[in-house]
Image (cartoon, rainbow, N blue to C red; front, side, top):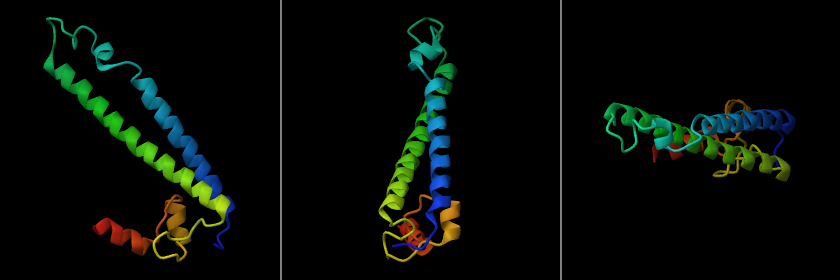
Amino acid sequence: MTTIDTTEFRALLEEERTRIANAIQYLHEENPGNMEDELGEVGGRGADNHMGDMASVTFDRELDQGLEEGAQQTLSQIERALQKIDEGTYGICERCDRPIGEDRLRARPWATACIDDQRLADRR
């Protein structure tokens, strides 16, 4: 059981969940169709095919896809943190079972490891 007042952290997590969900929605709105739709005839099989345009669109799509994957991962971590609040285990390191520092939780409310264990995991 943790002694952290979870009301503040629940609000932070819910705010971040909304922000990330909105960002994901924006990415979907930015790229509603496929690459051929975005390029039109330039990127299609037409004679005006331009490699630079295709490369630019491909790069943008891959960048957006990477951003969305990262956002989806963070969204999952936020959901997990909210579940931990409900279970009464929020703020406890999953590796050593010691409390995660409040400063760390304020910086990253979905953290699952104390700073020491996270540093060890990052070195691997």
